[in-house]
Image (cartoon, rainbow, N blue to C red; front, top):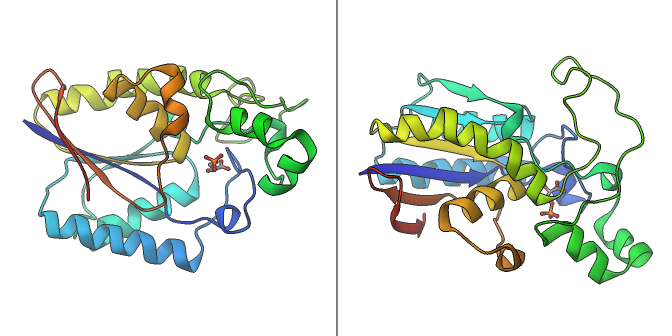
Length: 220
Ligand SMILES: O=C(O)[C@H](O)COP(=O)(O)O
């Protein structure tokens, strides 16, 4: 038996302002910092010892992971960062207000982009390469399915082998990438993922067997 905890970062400035974010690198708000502290406190009460923390290249997740590690008094454990865990790329929607977008494109269309498995948001025309994302790496936009295809190799190659060795793992990531992981772990059908939501700063605990099948799931 091994323990996997997954959690979405605390509230970001873009969450507060209801702005599509994706790979935009925005910080936590004061409320987000408090959510991360409370989540860390709850994890401390669980008394769990982690071997590793996995997070994305985005500061809202990294900040959350750091706060959680501080709260559980495990700042010494390795933090592995990967762009594979970045939020689903919202393409040309990023920076737009979610309510405003509904007025422009219609509520149904926006809900499809946000919650369906296969719908791809409008793509960015150009990508400006960044130091952390060399040319060709940053997508112009992603459906949840596309995000899942770049997330799952990281799960299979990096996280799953650790769990198989009995090493408890913590993942601090994003709403959509965690929905993709939950879909995979719980074998949720494409249409049913529409209903799955992941809240800011709310850890989920999976107890897994040797084959990484779920024995127990609970919201911490
Ligand atoms: O990228 C974003 O805008 C948020 O992190 C998640 O978006 P959502 O509210 O559409 O899930």
